[in-house]
Length: 350
Ligand code: NAI
Ligand code: MG
Image (cartoon, protein in one colour):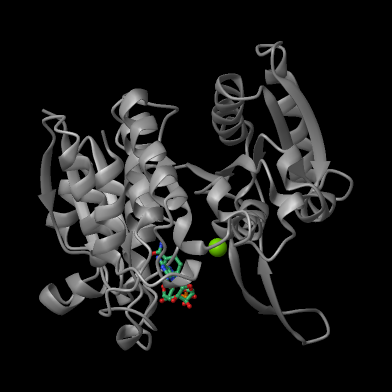
């Protein structure tokens, strides 16, 4: 029986994760669930944001269903004790190098984006973001330069193996979708990007059916606003992916709608699945949060870690049906509670 580690976290994490778990349970797939505290919730219990037992469970499980973390009461703590440290710890320990962020516009939400409905119509893209390298993980520090001025530095680097494994995920994803892969870099200026582009081009010979294009990141930012529906799969590094995926999320209406997967292999291994939003302290504990991002993350879990495409589609369809029938939490202009929205989705799960 597949084991799902449920790590609800803090803030609205537990509220939305409860609905995602209910959806998984309703599918009656014989999954085992084991829950453990993480982030602020774990700090309160154990004095650490990522207790060893929680990490052990995440490693042992077939997949991790994650809520959100970021309890503001612990913001002043040193970096390693803050709730967010748990997220980086799990990513690092599980080797989750590939972050998949689909941005899909459910037709019922055509008016929800700040962009015009005709611009976002048909939006269905996935950003494949490298998650454990790039300028975020390179050598960094402070020093004084030759003139005695304070200087900060962060080294951007990728080796070819790191580019290859993320490019592989991008190509495999494109192969299963509309067969269009756009690799985003800044190869006109950055050496790291030139290597990135070389490696991606070399791999393209293995995927003759995938149409590969390259785009500079500044142009990509512009195209994501001009014609987001023209994209299928975007593969990019950690920094560019961070920025572009937040930008793309707004095309889909609400941050509460978007799921993500973090994988250590194309499929079959223990990935982590979470909505892209944070702990939303401003609405935590009020039962107002939109659980759709968490529920759609559960769908990604079914698809990528359990290889159950049919069940994944069933969940995604149920969310679409619920929205089509007018189910809305406050972020979408409605008045349903988190649990009511979960009920509305469950009702469509047939
Ligand atoms: P946030 O995503 O928590 O909230 C941003 C805004 O979106 C807020 O107004 C919030 O009410 C709203 N929102 C978010 N999720 C929603 C949902 N499901 N339904 C309805 N409205 C929703 O980002 P913020 O405020 O910048 O960060 C809060 C904390 O979360 C911080 O400590 C941050 O570090 C942490 N964080 C954690 C993440 C994670 O666990 N993966 C990701 C992003 C932030
Ligand atoms: Mg971000």
